[in-house]
Length: 212
Length: 108
Image (cartoon, rainbow over the protein chains, first blue to last red):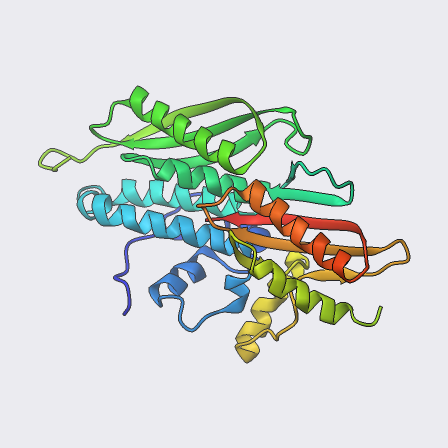
């Protein structure tokens, strides 16, 4: 069964920043639009070049979360404020396509001197985005890791931007994002977290007559 | 080295069976994966080559693995389990690796 198409609008269609130049590396030659189509088709027929691309898999997971959000938020807002919503959704897609590339190798400890165990920076950014998106009322924006992440034990600062849905207290939302990101990073990585800085860069508010 | 293809296939099966591993990605370059898109478009299939790289230079076997990990598991722990499974498999064959590289490329 096909999913109903939601308005996941590429930046190129809205006049927002052009991110196409970032896609070949992170998405292994694919585009956000192709991944959208792949989801529309319920990933059928299977495309090995997408299924075998870590960047595509991270992007697909984020797109699915974004589609879930559009079902609950944009159905209401897009009707009232289409230009605004196109822009911020495009901004999310732009960040997504930039962040899925593998990036730096983040080490994992092992006693065996022959072991070279790592998590890609792209996987960690995807983890951070997933943790933030899981916080009710929050839409993740940009994710950055600052510091010498390739060196075990070096202090690392996580910087994330997020938007909050109207009606959620901003300090509480920021704190919940911080705790969710911290929990996931501690569970999956061995990063020495010096700080997790959360910047709320926007509040998505329905116009008068909305339900939120 | 004769047998590296067979070893790669064995290790791929082994790694896929490790708890917490959801995917074994092609450990080749992103350029290779991008070329896979072309192969998809032309034939609909990329072929059945094992995704784990095994090389046997004179200094010893090197193994390179790229995996996806379930969100329910600790990525770091799964990564170590994959390494240990490979090391034990090689030891059972009477071989030792000069390097076992395991990369977690996606989580969840």
